[in-house]
Image (cartoon, rainbow, N blue to C red; front, top):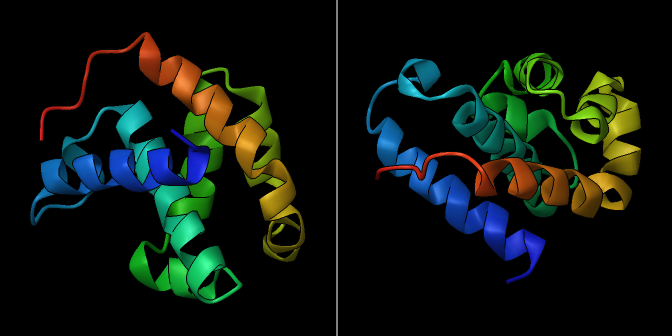
Length: 113
């Protein structure tokens, strides 16, 4: 499964778990997956992160914080960039970011939808 498909499908499982609540009921890795899903949504559908911010206003700072807490340096480096820099580099960094998250996900408990 490609990384784009993985983030869409795994992000959907996280969204199903969220239900009508915010990210407060999610494990940190689940919240990070949601943040990347939100960023990906904005970048693939609008070509920027403005629409991502409309979906989840804290996606950028929350992804940076959680990636640091989970010791995911490639994901942290991406989300530590300023908005315009992340927009410019997003697709170049996407696969390495998602690979890093997938590796962490493989060793974590599964998301119950």
